[in-house]
Amino acid sequence: MDSDLLTKEVDLPLQMDESTQKSLQRFTKEAIRQDASYAACTLPIDLTDPLGCMKTGWQTQTFNYYWEKPSEHFSIAAGGELLSLSAEGSGRFGNINRQLKEISNNTTVFKGAPHAYAGLMFLGGFSFFDRMNDPRWDSFEPASLTVPKWLIFRDDKYAFVTIFTDINRFNEFITLFEHLISSFHRVEQIIEKARSVSFRDTTLKTGNGTLRSHNSLPAYQNWIASVKQAKQYIRTNEFDKIVLARRFSVPKKNDQQAVDMLHNLRIHYPGCSSFLVHRPNGNTFLGTTPEYLGSFHSNLLLTEALAGSIERGSTKEEDSMLENKLRFSSKNKEEHQFVVRDIRHRLQPLTENVYCDHQPRIKKLSNVQHLHTPIRAHLKDDTDILPVIEQLHPTPAVGGYPRKDAMEYIRELEDFERGWYAGPVGWMTPSGSGEFAVAIRSGLLSEDEAHFFAGCGIVADSNPKEEWEETNLKLSPMLSALNYD
Image 1 (spheres, rainbow, N blue to C red):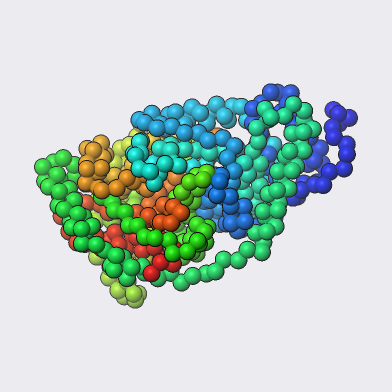
Image 2 (image 1 turned 90 degrees about the horizontal axis):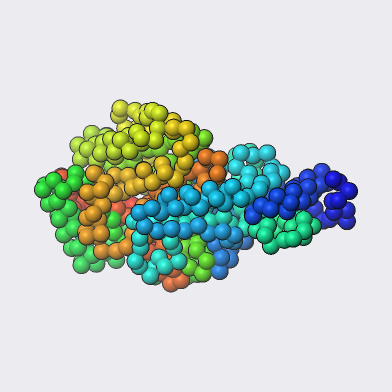
């Protein structure tokens, strides 16, 4: 077989040695022979900052994606769009799941890097509702997963780059091989440029001054009226809890790139999941969320209940006092238990068992602390990721309880389109690994405006003014990361 391989000298990219070169040539020859549709080819690289690569590889006219959990030294940067899977309506999760299975079955993988996540990946997310009707979200679909053209991955020990390509464009293995080498070289240039990129660390302000100065009387009055109406629905047993959110929009003062804003967020909120999804020639959705919807490792599912909030104290003593106030607040405990009970109930059809603590913990972020209950479950055999995500979304922490009853009233009581706010955003592999977070603490960046979103749970004894202040607290991270104060 070696006699049929390309024999001319090739400028090898990245960490490719001659042995890997020959293996890749054999792979391309077999890919052409097998009549596969797509190829995912992975090679190792030196450890690098994928966010720097996101900045140097950014192209407005195409798909850009970023994901990072700084506390776990885990990050993904990706660009270009090879394949875009989309769907809408009540069957959107199943529709996307069928599409990705078809693509997976028609993709051949070259693992030049010995890592579990080397190979095919799907990146993207889902809107809160299964349909959208707002021009701000025109470039986003209600369900959208993308196979990029390139992807850079890093964890605490390893880094690699994956190139994704359409094999149908090539009739001979030599041209496919040369295309892959050329693609690796282009990513190598992105990586080299990124080594000289430096981000300016910014001390984030609270943002409260801007929020208070921009709080218009009509917006505040509308909020008070909505919360009061929600409480009336609770009194008449329409639902037990509903999550109401608001949108806060400001003009962008400069041309600061979204990746600079994301850097501010990852530095100051290392325990959260930072994310970015930029649609081709469209807007950018980004944020740093403390809540993950599901983390998947083969048949193990990790999820959580995160509901009930209070601010952080300015001193250790004040912080402890506020923690105790949260821990023993009947309103917050009731809201939290709705979430725990509902998640356990929803997971039962898909799992062998579900485990969680009887009492919530306290999850402390830099500006807020939450009641927090980790939940773990073992999925039944042959259970796919997306049916689980569909079953979990939306949790009562962002929707309400009971889910179906509360969801019917959210659009009535809110005066904006949620879009992807509070929807699932993340990544997944065909082998059953992946992670989706709940896209809260988030914003939508257009060419000249930034739209930020925040919500809070409304129960029978909610105080409308206190809930308004809670949304101000949750809006602060995104507003300050934009350096708008």
